Length: 415
Ligand code: NAD
Ligand code: ADE
Image: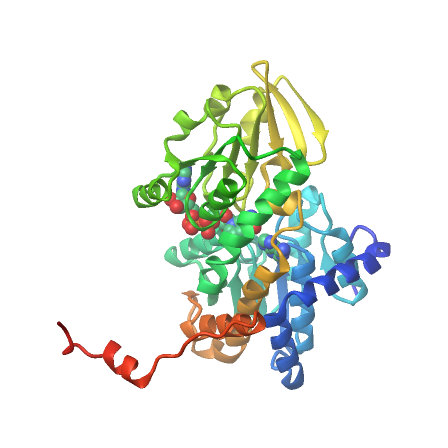
């Protein structure tokens, strides 16, 4: 078996981490139990390009239990947990991933594609992009794919609009049990995990500027408030901006926020949200972090070019001397929760990856009637996952009575 990881000797430590995650992912473990009997993915090869973490490993083991073969790489040069990658390689999964694989990032993706997959499972669409642009000859056996994150869904929708998408892709991200939980609660907590590990600083009493008030931004702003921060939100969407204001946050432009913020966190999925012009207005000691998918939200290139010097002050924390002020950039401006911490907690990845599992199953079962376009997750899938999750939490909910169902579908009962 071909694979490339940092050090196979890390495997026992990685295996322990995976077992810890398994204890906290009851929905996915339930699916593993159910589908390991019938093996509906037998004969299917999956190419995975998604952060190599302990939670991802639980998904990988679940696919294998359901009969699939896989090859896997990370979707960010800084997010691979080397011990987990080693554990997967030891379990004979062809893994091409190690932390700091900046120069070999696309090489790893290509190795995974060379296994001639039937299904692509992507996070950010780099795998889908590489397949379409660089290795189209491998597309013949591909029956469909799934996409894990908002930025990836934006990219594949753009491909669909340009008539370039060659096979159906299910937007797993857009499942309610994914984006209303992973993006909000998952990122809300893990972003601070990354900020704490790389800075150790207190949030209470700080002005925290959150760029973007979508799913991720809402989660971060809520947690920052809970930690005692004074929150400022920047937005481009007038409705989101209004929501942020009515949630009790100050709203202003980045230009206005630049000189008053102590900590900036970007979560927009957009590029150059914090530019050199903004950085030049910032206070001495300002900290910059990003939780959006790509490292383009903060203009790191401009900072690198114009700073007089830079020095690593702690792991994942580099001090730049810009106009004789100190600006601290966390995790190279890459997603701080995965680059400086371990990403989201297993409890929330449980639902995200249950969505991924069921989406792959749907591709396998329904691909013949699907077109090369972006598909949504069905309401049934979302409800199924929510019900299993509630059950695992020991929570019972009410059911509509027949009388209530009739009432809700009638129009003749009024005042
Ligand atoms: P979303 O579409 O719900 O929200 C993005 C928000 O950013 C929107 O409200 C939009 O109006 C706003 N925005 C766009 N450009 C802006 C600008 N220039 N200034 C201020 N606001 C701007 O998306 P989301 O689900 O919140 O995802 C945001 C990013 O986070 C994406 O890149 C996504 O892939 C990524 N993500 C990361 C993680 C993680 O683990 N770090 C998890 C989930 C999603
Ligand atoms: N995205 C955010 N957190 C993650 C995790 N723990 N594993 C995989 N992908 C993630």
